[in-house]
Image (cartoon, rainbow, N blue to C red; front, side, top):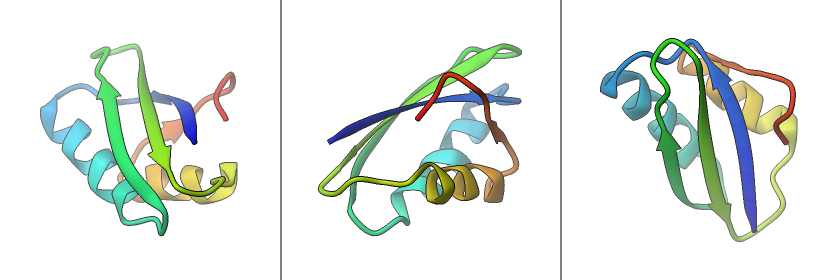
Length: 73
């Protein structure tokens, strides 16, 4: 399954690494591919073996210090 998230507040490679690490920690996540748009809305495509809830993905992104914005899963 693929889930796309729109994330605000990311500005650099460290941001990408932090978000990737938090999302990868979710049970069932196989891969995370983040397209950084520094100063704008970045996109993360999450590949997983199960359906992921918006709440658990949002909490993982928030744990990294960023925010999932509307228009994402």
